[in-house]
Image 1 (cartoon, one colour):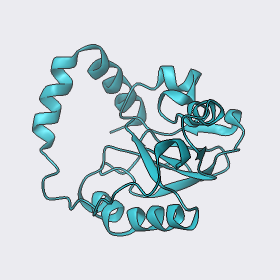
Image 2 (cartoon, rainbow, N blue to C red):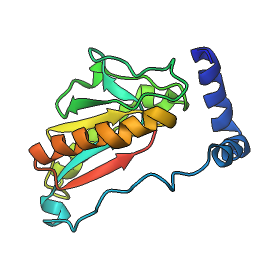
Image 3 (spheres, helix red, strand yellow):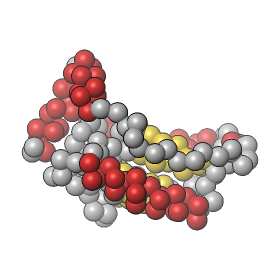
Length: 170
């Protein structure tokens, strides 16, 4: 499907929720996707280092865009520094209407909100690096995310001593 058709469909699904619900039922569930082992938070939230994982297709302008030609999506990910200039952040994702996020990336990648929470003493600090990926994955690309990309993201967060991860859909 061409990119303009995907973009048109994302706008229609956004404005006609019954269609997106019908599509969701057709797409099936992720019951067969293994969940990671979850652990107890090691420190209170007001002392925690928090990272963001966004499925909104966010990446830096200089990084490779996500593959919008593959009908299974793109199971890769992009590391995004906390201090990356916001004007360098772009969204490559045709499967949701990101008009609002194009105006304020914090809609799908709330790193400025994390910084504000840290300044207010509500969290310890934002992680030095976050992760951008795209949702709308199936088949081999979903397997790529589960089998490879997820482990790489976890490794980055372990290297950065992340205590808590905020997962944000696109």
